[in-house]
Image 1 (spheres, rainbow over the protein chains, first blue to last red):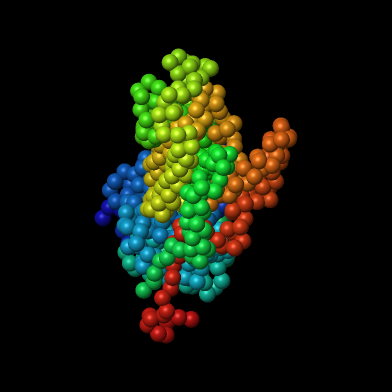
Image 2: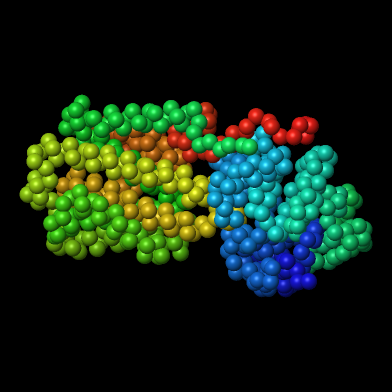
Length: 242
Length: 342
Ligand SMILES: Nc1ncnc2c1ncn2[C@@H]1O[C@H](COP(=O)(O)OP(=O)(O)O)[C@@H](O)[C@H]1O
Ligand SMILES: [Mg+2]
């Protein structure tokens, strides 16, 4: 079956820094895939390229059979490609509830009133109900990350790109998050998850990729990949955590 | 089931106060003298200009320093329509709006290619071009300007007093219409998008909002309103010249000052800012150029101590909104399945 999202031969450099050097990646429909790699490896940039906020120097992005390489972010979003930002990007002057309403209404074209109810449910699922009417700008970093996730889910994505959503969570919160992500996946959403919290990642993904030097240097069963010697070598700090 | 409400207690009070203020102001011809009416009408035009600029810069992120292009355009349209085509001044003001919008389209096509500071400079260059073009129109007095012919002014109303009342009410009505339109816009679906853009353009795009389209709509709408207010301003002045019509000082610098000290990106900001501006102007005008210096100092102090403006300071401290713009989720008493809820 054709992948739901594919990066084909993507290259990108910022000045002298090569962040992607002919990268290929295929996400099967219904699959959950994890990406790890040292800081600055170019993981976040790949999400930017996939969702239209960063233009690649070469290569193509294919979503559900359609070439979306040059599509602006709002079109990617409306097609069903959602992302959370590693550095949360809330609508800080709006309430938490309004943040989610914006995503739900504009990503799907639904009327504002028709998304109120599902948005309230979503806040409940993401543990933000008690803060629904607070200004998003006043949230703690943790709640901002929750809001990133809630807002991405509100767009009713077919593919969800998560960028480091588990950092700083307690053991229990992390378990809740993993359950939520598994739930989302069970609902038919395909997922790519960039994460440094390896144990959370291993609990949720079927395949793990390692990005280093502008290329994926490992790809396969998460537990096998995480114990592979190349990963241990370039990625020791985090591999030791796992 | 949950419900969503726009109004809060502060906004109910705010709306009631605004209603009372509107009635009191509408009756001003019966309690104020000519001096007062002139001053109030001028205040209204600045509220309208600042509110439009706030929509443009504060919400849509289009920091224009060239809105005098549309003020001047409106003013010149008024004079052209009245003098050359014999149109009634009030009709001319209404025509200036759509023409302002029409002119905004090609201007946007040009300056929307520019980003950040280049955009701001672009808007200013456009305004300068407009000023130079206006000085070439010899039937409208060229570089030295022209007055509205007395006969046409007199024909507006049966008496001088009636004309002054008419212009006052017109200023009040137009300003109320501008504010009403902005409130309606912000409460609409477009307003939701616009508020999101105000807060975070990257996130707005990534959540399905066509940012460029919304910006274009706002730019054209602002051109509409600003040209209309420009026409009104020069009906009040009765005389126009390229330098007064396209004055960056009067129609942009003061307007930015007002919006910034009042609170940019909040609908209440320009109203608060205009009141502060006029109080300062009325009390400090005798000081000559020192008055501009004091205004500059006030702007700097406000920007340092209250970067969200005076209204921003109040609104954040007390959670106030004077107009019901927010969407608040009201949770109905729990009727969900018992047990699940820790
Ligand atoms: N817009 C940009 N301009 C210049 N350099 C950038 C930009 N975005 C990212 N980079 C650089 O590209 C590299 C990869 O960044 P990023 O994709 O954020 O890595 P990761 O998410 O794997 O930590 C880093 O060295 C970063 O400094
Ligand atoms: Mg990153």
